[in-house]
Image 1: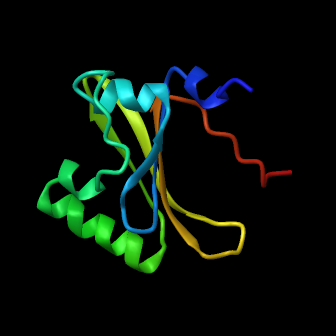
Image 2 (image 1 turned 60 degrees about the vertical axis):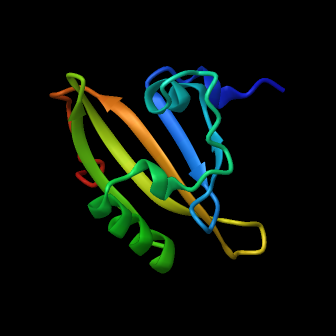
Image 3 (image 1 turned 45 degrees about the horizontal axis):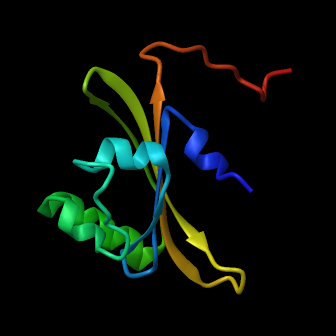
Length: 115
């Protein structure tokens, strides 16, 4: 089966295990996070790619199994960063998944709670 995640052109998916080691990245994640598509960081720890402030946040996410959601602007693009725990089939903490989605600067918002 073809890896559907590699077909997402504006969504970077990066996954770590419970210790913060990279276990998977889709093609777009590799394009935006690696210097070369030939680089391989699978098995490396996420801490080596982040500054001290980010490391503190990541440690908190790994320790407390919580999510972190925010927006950034990078290279002229607005992005939603969604970092969330994922869980193994047995319910134990598996690690973190980060979705980085390019979003429009302005976009509609619909309130689905309104009748």
